[in-house]
Image (cartoon, rainbow, N blue to C red):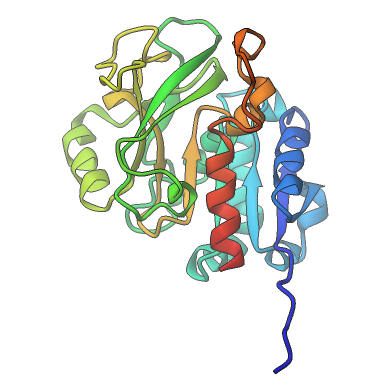
Length: 272
């Protein structure tokens, strides 16, 4: 019987002016045996997006975060690639938004996506409660029961250590929709990460354990299909053990850190 070699997944890393985490994301994906390509938004017109197996919108400050974080790129993405994005989701091709990418997914109507891609945001990532830029390592608790394809390497309740770096990361719903939308997130298994302390106790909004004041300590959510995922922390900055803030104090630094589990889950899904 002829053995057909596994094709390396092709992953598009989207960039525009202000993107600044594309190189780290590409390095992580190359380490896992994929073929990532960093492409400017202008090079993805005319249906080229659907040539890729997955899409990643990395962190940074797209278009200087004018208006509000992720708003301009979110509108450009939804207006330019609406048809391709809907096809991506329908075909189960993963989309990952990290930090500014999470903001873009919310602004474009892809997340939380209760009834599919919306024409306007159902949530927001507002100014941090501290009213300043927060750059620190934090703890997350994994909440997903198995739907999110990006966290299948993590068991429910698993704690991970990972950095945040943002000024507008406070996840919020409209006040009158909070109870309804939180119920939907839970029923659809869309909750993925919540901020917690080193012992796994939820932050309950307390700073700095919750670094931005996010509603219900939400740090990351997925869509109802589990293939569109956004999170404020940076897994690409917690991929290698030498990226850990205390690695020099360790007797022996680990080869990898917790952020690798997210990329590894994505690659296993693509290679399945």
